[in-house]
Length: 64
Image (cartoon, rainbow, N blue to C red; front, side):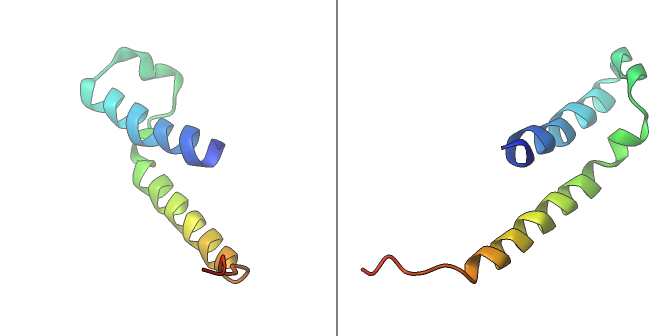
């Protein structure tokens, strides 16, 4: 659940929105977080893809 909901939302929504809106509460985070958003997206995609490729080996039809 963490990999599906928490991690992507934090990078896809929070950091870019704070940067675009020029909010002052970003002082607690390194500025690099705003630029890591595409990298996190690619890593999450590759993780999901590799999990899919691993899981499809063990798939068996439901028999319909």
